Image (cartoon, one colour):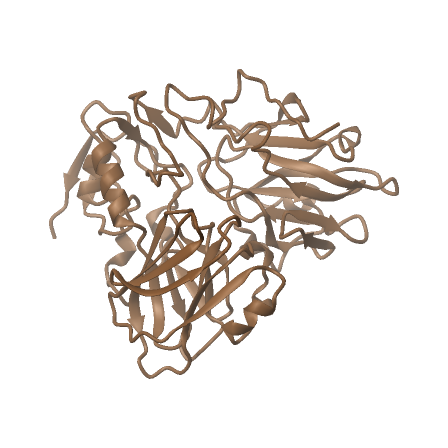
Length: 469
């Protein structure tokens, strides 16, 4: 039993070496870590990639720190096996955000958690739980969960999973399984996309997506992480972060994935409090936010550098106004450039060999911000390439009813376009009638005879009708 894995060629492709209909793909989400919400007997180690049940045989439920994609494999290495207990690891998925289960997590995944709507799990055979073995599983478009151990795929494990919503991986570290690790086996097999996943429909084999060159990647847009300070509030797909009224610190927010080399992260100031005390802070860290608890974050950001992880903290004394834009970027040499409205505000160096998350502390004058991405990159890649690629959005996009209410920036912002996240949704899709995209994005995605689907209900789009108000 070793770390080398090979998956059946007929069921998978490598996004680096293979293709789906000629389209080279890769999964550009950050590697899986364990969520901060977990059972009472679970301890997280190794920067949140290892979960250990330190006592008892139950209260060992753990989740992935982000939703997983349809067809995305979850790889789990068995780190410690005990002979003192019977039973073994349970694996599955949940469509319930782990944060919502923080105060009501049951003792067991089966049958306690699975009896709650939106949860699916099943126990593996005890003989499969061997030290250093690697288990993998994934859900296909039909809701069937496939699994295997090391180089052998065992087929469908169970079915009935609802793939129309976001899905987090669920593990119950139960019985003889006492410690497991999420692994990222890119050195041996690379991530893959199941051939049953039809969310991306290629129509021209000449078009290539390259994450390292900052090309547009479906589903890769930056948002804020679910982990944040106790005085921070997230809304609108976690693109907007606010400081609670009456508070002056502990308003930390983190990006939901590391910032890539040469990638630009642009953040717009959408509300200020000129008389507020304190200083706005930002910085770079190698600490995966999923491994943090809100209570661990200090009142003063400068104290973060005393932690064991890699932290760089900067105080920003700029006099910000509403609509100012802050841009972060890192080059190959580890130089971080921070711009205010395209003018350099700060420059410092970091260790670019590490995965690096950007964080803000909404203290002082800046009280509300919104991630707006990198318009230049989108304009280049989407506008120039849409003639070569037809895209249907991932099925886990929330309905418009799930978008939080308007921010201080725009009273109509609850109808924001689900593609660019910039313009208001101002067109109706025929025949379903959903209003979820701006007219420009809808026309870039759809043309007569295309197979694009509505991101809300999955109904094929037959026409795009602009709405005038």
